[in-house]
Length: 157
Image (cartoon, rainbow, N blue to C red; front, side, top):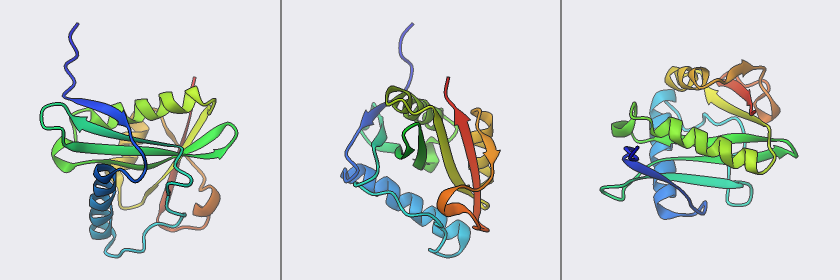
């Protein structure tokens, strides 16, 4: 069966220009949703702690269309960070491809539990993670006490 995906998923360094631009676009979108730039209760990921950074790239145009990262929490778990897909590519399967690639990367590293934080003003993200097998959990780590956070977890098989 031929590969019908219109994108590839690539491992990139955190400071990759295309990845940085996607994260900038995500920030603008979230600033608009929350009406402020103060909507990240945890510490932002960085080159020092993003163990994996993936970028989805359109096969035809070579444009970066999505990204996602993993930050290790402890020897057996990691946090999904900076999941973002450009608006024009939403609903095409890019997010699911990125999520599965992050899950595979986590499993290869021996991380069996993935957690994430999303926001109260991101019902679309909440629906996506529930659909993909994640369940809501109590706020964890730096998100404890945040009125803007909703946390999810999935145990990998």
